Image (cartoon, rainbow, N blue to C red):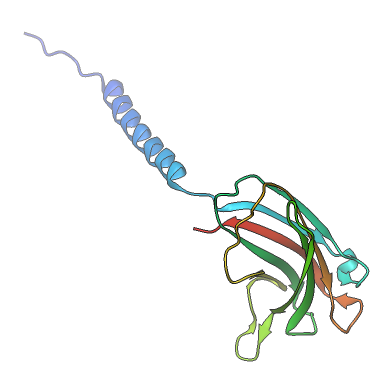
Length: 171
């Protein structure tokens, strides 16, 4: 009797296919188990990195799900050369079916012990600050408007790169 020759390529292909299927299952499982909490984020560039009081960017976004709570943040990017450890903003907002409201917000950008607060890369720093400590529930779906106004004494306010609004579902 003769021995039947073993086809090495079939064995290698079978092992390769099994490993490939396992890797794909892990990848697909990992992708489906991740929750994306970002609903909306928009940042507006400040012309010449000099925020004049007259420049008041308006950010519009739509809310469709009124059954969940949301966290609303102000996002701000500045350079290392920014001269203050905070920034004061007036936030004018209009929610669906509501009148315009205003809120004054003091955003800390630095402290005496650690220096700049937030995330930094090279000489650029980004800070996200909740507008309200409590999550917010929108009563109606529709378009929301946020107008961001800097109210610091110095005008124009130099070394501010951009400012924006970020909305996330609160889990």
